[in-house]
Structures are given as structure tokens and as C-alpha cells.
Amino acid sequence: QVQLVESGGGSVQAGGSLRLSCTVSGLTLDRYAMGWFRQAPGKEREGVSALANNPYYTDSVKGRFTISRDNAKNTAYLQMNGLKPEDTAMYYCAARSLYTGRPWAAESTYNYWGQGTQVTVSS
Figure (spheres, rainbow, N blue to C red):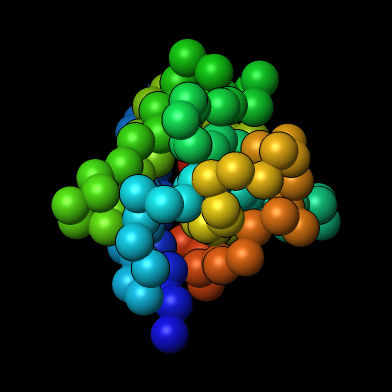
């Protein structure tokens, strides 16, 4: 059984940092691309970042967020610096096959999802 468990969310002031972790069990992480998505209240879920052979970021987080993975620990990370109130959302990690040929932010291509971790940024 595949499980993705996010951790590391919390409440911070604007300009602060958080590091999200996504611990994966039931699959070998190095055979999968990992994505981070977020959903703010009243908004659609959006892709934040993904890591396959290369990292990808949505424009609003470029230069502030860094995605990484530790295959030995079967864990993916999202380091978030310079947080802004508009980053407030529920953050989800997801996994999909490395070679889909589809855009990194295409949610429907991700087979496995975590339950989410809340990030709240106050001004």
C-alpha cells in the first residue's frame, strides 16, 4: 500500500521559512517524479513545484522555494523561504511515473497523493 505523508506545515510570519517533508512508503522514490501542490480557501489547487530529472516551479515561488529529494530516505522536501501571505494554503505532495510526457503541473497524471499539511503566513 502506497502512502505519502506530509509534515512541516505551520504558522509563520511573512518573510519566514518552513520546510515541508513528504515521506513515502510502498514505492521506490527514485522511480517517480514528486510534485507539490497547494490549495487556498476558495481557490483551485495549483502546482507549486515538481522534481523529475529537473526541478520545476510555478512563477510565483521561483527564487523562494526549493524542491529536493532524498531517495535513501524515500522523502521529498519543499524548502520555502521568504514566505508571503499569499502562500497560505493546504500543501499536498504527490507522486507519478517519471516518464509521462505530460506537464509537471497536470494533477491528473499524479497517481498518489498525501493528505496535506497546512501552511499559514501572517502579515
